[in-house]
Image (cartoon, rainbow, N blue to C red; front, side, top):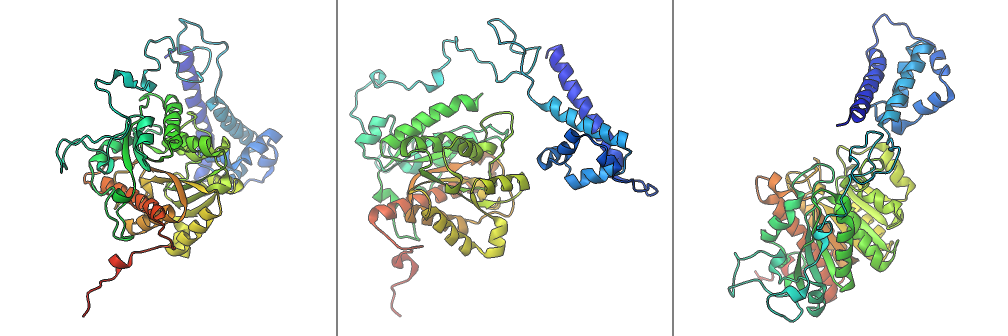
Amino acid sequence: MSNRMSFRAERRAALAALAFATLAPALVPAAHAAPVANASIDALTPEQKAFVADSATLERFGLTREKVAEILAAKDPQAARATVAAMMATIAADRFQPSHGPAEPGRSALDPDGDMAAVQLNPAAGGFNSMAVVRPPALDAHHRAPGPFSVRRYMYESQGIPTFAGAPLALRKDDLVAGKVDVAFVGVPLGFSSGWRDAHNAPGVMRAMYGLGDFDVYAGVDPGLVLNLADYGNFAVDKMSVELSVNHVRQMVGEMVDAKVVPFVVGGDHSVMIPTVTAMADHYGAGNVGLVQIDAHNDVARDQAHFYSDEQALSRLIESGTVKGGSVVQIGTRGPGLSAADFDWMKSKGIRYHTMAQVETSGWQSVVDTTLREIESGPQNVFVSFDISALDPAYASGAGRPAANGLTMREAVPLVRRICAETKVVGFAMLDVAPYLDLSYATALNADQIMNACLTGIAMRKLGVKGANYHSALTVESAVAH
């Protein structure tokens, strides 16, 4: 690290310590301390008064406006001004400080004159774009006609090379078109954007798990027999950069949509929603895609250092105009990481959300019925993004960001099946499954079951099965006469 970088880091730490030192004595007032008049607050400069009125900034210190007012009122005017000045200096030091000149060939990536705006890359490298290069058909050892193909050796093989739902493999867009594929599964093993690990292992583990593409006892439909399914393999991601992966995933999902396929995307963490939904908007038009996000987290952070991350997945889509706030419905939000400021921002954008607090006060069925009405009132084309953290950890301990008091499988499965049966779902994503964090197989099994519920709903629409919350009489009631 350069001396300049070390100095700036030390300065930030010193300023933070100063701010804490000036605040800490007032956090536990002495028993004999007499209250001081609000003249200390009145003595602040206009800029300082505006600073202590900004709730969002004060939250970074773990404080509220009321608490700051209490702290400052216990100080003399000079100490109050010094306290706020230290806080403002801490925030200023934390902001981006651009370098004084552009990087030049041979210049150190650690610019001693300021912060780097991004991790420096080397576009002159021979393999710079190797991640996104698709192998041309001409390099195949044997020519084959376009279309999905089986990778099974034996007629009734169950333990061979795994594919999603045991479906045939498709490698290129031509295979999807020639096979008239209805639904294609694809893995996007991107799993590090907020530092939570293992989501990149989900595609491999879920391929090997059963329960996907099987008979659905609720609807009496076998989606594996009704729909033409294919496994489209994994998309390449850059293991050191979410940013470098976004455009490639967007392009590849776009190819699937252009082939009139419903993509079933298996992540990866929730940053995968950004390029996936953007690809949908490329095809159907910005603002013409409704987004249903079933998730413990609202993913609307707006001030993180990296532009793309799972915690900013929805806010980036809204701010870019890819989806409209009024076209978004969230279900299941709860737990740590949420804030009043985030919910205020969501309200300002018209985002409709149903927290677990609402489930507690209104009841699950009321929330589901409201959700269906909201989806149906939005754009015709619906994308469903299911984060496994929506489930309670009792059903999915292998979640990248688990949160207690979540949905049960008995709630999640019918919800997903209804959405996919009663609305036009053009894409589905199963995200943030972290299978190696689960000592059992329950997380991967339940994730496959939830995807199967959506498959069943899409199959019901293809068969023309109608009705709200449809259940098959064959499987609900016994026909045995007594």
